[in-house]
Image (tube, rainbow, N blue to C red):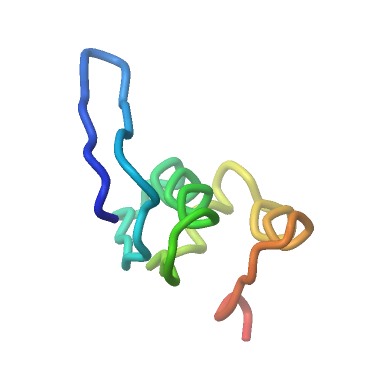
Length: 78
């Protein structure tokens, strides 16, 4: 996404300017899918989350909630 990241023990820091859109493969990790979805909300271009249904294991209403705050969600259940 074009930003610098650092990992220090249990802290993940994202530095840099505005992120660019990207295709994200969370490898069935619902936390990664949700985190990059939120980051994608401020990206310059489209962000695609592969295997997006993995979020249902911890937050079944996540995609509905993202739409309710203005996210454009495509490809879910179509």
